[in-house]
Image (tube, rainbow, N blue to C red; front, side):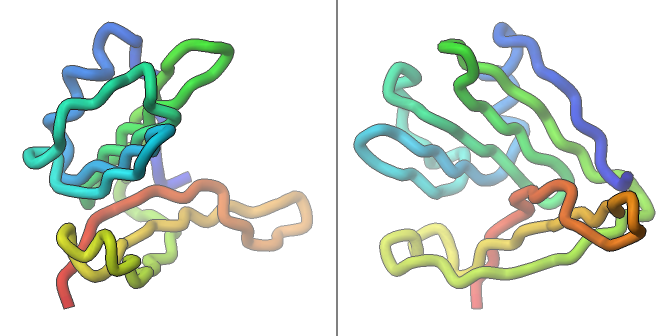
Length: 126
């Protein structure tokens, strides 16, 4: 595989947010997409899922079994991945125009290529 997944301990996950350029946060009441440096204070009781990302890595915070958990996905050299770009909805264009996504390829038992993991990788201006 061309990526590494590392479990992040709950006491360390919030400290790592500033290490990433962009934030996508799913709250009960809203969705935030912005630069991490411009992120308003998050009410973690209302947060369903959060992704903090840049070109090389993504910190994925999510709820599982009633607790917030996190993993960090780091890209490694020699990656078999597709780079896709998706037009952002008008309400998110303050952050940029295109969301960049890396889809890492894996292979099933028949040798067919499948997407093994999807990671947010950046935001571009057009």
